[in-house]
Length: 112
Image (tube, rainbow, N blue to C red):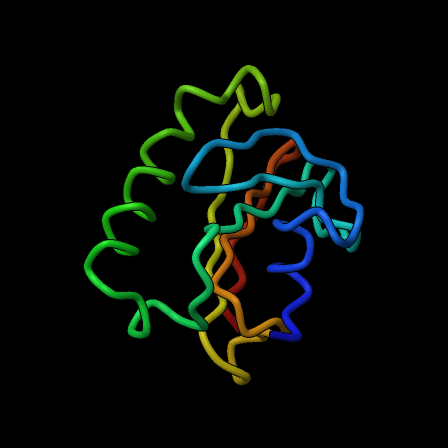
């Protein structure tokens, strides 16, 4: 498989890891859109939410629910935003579902 995130998870490509468990890896994003920008990478490969099987959905839910416990580790104490881009029109450039974790500054809302 030629997936950059799968290669990062496998340790074939270096990344700045900030957290890892059996379900996920959290790394620093190299193309920051906020002062703090991390990527939560599920360890299973699937391109989108609708492609995840039941077991992968459960693991993704557990990963998301673990974030409040990681607030101090990630420095998210003043709030954070989660973003999942689904498909080309939404800006998804890597076809491995991932969640952007943005923090470290006040963020406005501009859906356009």
